[in-house]
Image (cartoon, rainbow, N blue to C red; front, side):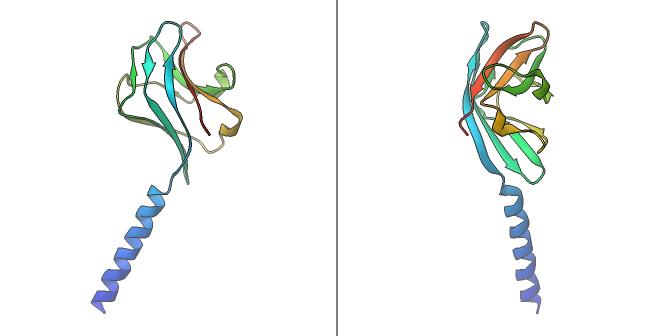
Length: 127
């Protein structure tokens, strides 16, 4: 009986872990700098039960700006899509944004300088 309980506990733990790890990649791309800024590295967007996660890879590097914001667009940045302020300049980082975001309408991800209203980094998303 104890062996069955242990197997049951292990099965539940594995199912729970798989549910957390079950986020699926829906878009990815590589940064290019804009407006004289250097932005490089990879980005992946995953979709899970609780929303979307934007993941900056460990190769991310950005030279900085006074007020960098994160958002989406098509041929240009759309301010209404802003979902976070960029809080790091290098390496891995994750940002969450809600499931209500209409990601299929956007082809690009942006780092936008709010202070000067200029694009400073862009990723062409491969969906």
